[in-house]
Image (cartoon, rainbow, N blue to C red; front, side, top):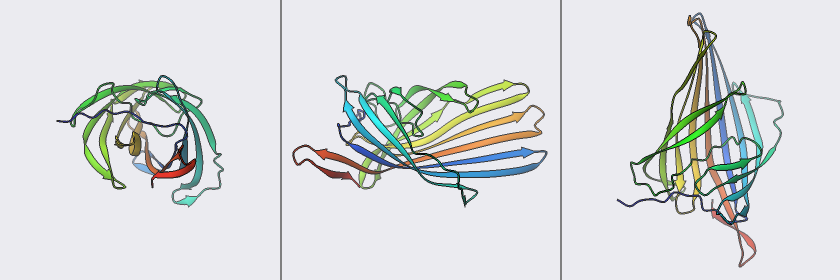
Length: 237
């Protein structure tokens, strides 16, 4: 079976434009009663390759522009500012430096080529809302080939360890799962859907809080400056 070498292949001046959809479903249960609140945020994420370093890593400039914010399907007047960040990422997807946390997490690839059906493990650190950090292992499995916008992509299934913690009669848990479509031809993330579920349960089970965050990312456009013609040309639409 053919092996696949997974790595990001970016060029200086490339601009990746992604649509990002974040849905946060918050459920609160107390003594048999349930309250639910759903936030839906749409963002436009622009990622420009500002420099390719001699070691093959990439310096990226990222701009995150809010498009809309709904709460229980109702438009919100709360202003979400446009944010910018700089980050350095190696060709295997490992973030080497960043000025802030990105809402989009790119998968990390192994150093050696993989076969369909093969699983690899990558550690990650997540930040909790209370400011704490937790370390989890993420398990990636190459599932097969799927078309996305007429391009062949590798389907990568991801599942995390389940983290649990008990403090002051409250049990907390967290786990993630998702699917990523990655173009080996262009060396770029094409689509990603990741769901993270956080639970907090009182020991007597009288109160429970659940937060389910779904992040969906889709590549809208990839443009590249053509050195020979000195003009922008669409590669992916």
